[in-house]
Amino acid sequence: MSQELYELYERNFPFIVREKETVLRILQNEGNTAIEQRDEQNKLIGISVINQNTVLLLCVDAAHRNKGIGTKLLAMSEDAVRAGGYDKIVIGNGFDYIMPGVPTSKRYVDAENEELYPGLDETASDFFAKRGYTHSWQCNCFDMRFPLNRFERDTYHVGDTVEGITYRFAAIDDLAEICACTDDACPEFTQYYRSESLYTADNDTRVLIAVSDGQVVGTLIVGVEDAGKHLGSVGCTTVKRAYQGRHIAVNLVTIGTKYLRDIGFEEAYLSYTYTGLDHMYGYAGYKICIYFMMAEKEL
Image (cartoon, rainbow, N blue to C red):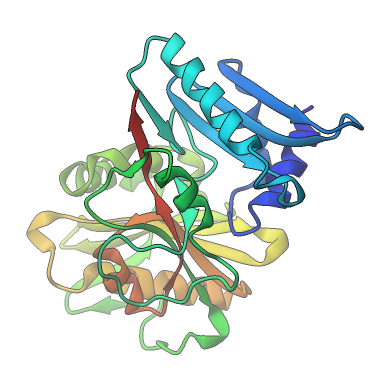
């Protein structure tokens, strides 16, 4: 069932970047409820996967859309969530996420540095909007990409000092300082920096830090998103509040992106970010490739 379900997901969400192992782990969670739709040959053509009050995945194969299958799956999902004692249903991010919300080309506030995937439209977000769902954020949620053959900002490198700030890869001895920085700037990111594997030189994902007078004042996770697709990633950017406004975040992203290009990645990627960061990441060359409707509905 897991492989069949993964193939259905892959057919219907070509724009979503998520490691196969991660998707399978989420789909196999023991707390999930799956509502299936099969054709006369018993082929899986539609699915809703629910965990607590969250629909982690809802899709119908293209050949079977506009026949009421998606509407039925969603109504059954709402019934299941209601029966579980919840008064609100969420589409996308729950205990974990396959995608943050509903993929769409629709922006909910003004944006910049946009280059959307060809063929992306508002069909999915319209489906949910017509059934009473609203975008719950006061800003946009989106992913960004950057073909690294376009990267031209070669001024700085890992190890350089720029206006008194040194940009280097972190070692495990830096962990306490790193957590102090993330706790100050963005506490929800601290958990992602605690893995000791990020601080070994041979790991494919590492932590780039900005250091001022021995103090870690900025952080960035840089590494592999999908090695088979030559796709690198940057993310979880933080800068201590007292040091913000000095282009430290921009320098971290630019230097980290240059590193990805120099070690052979063809594209760089960042996921699940929000309005304002399209400007900051845009300095390095990233562009919004997909938006998400952070859909929810009171039941």
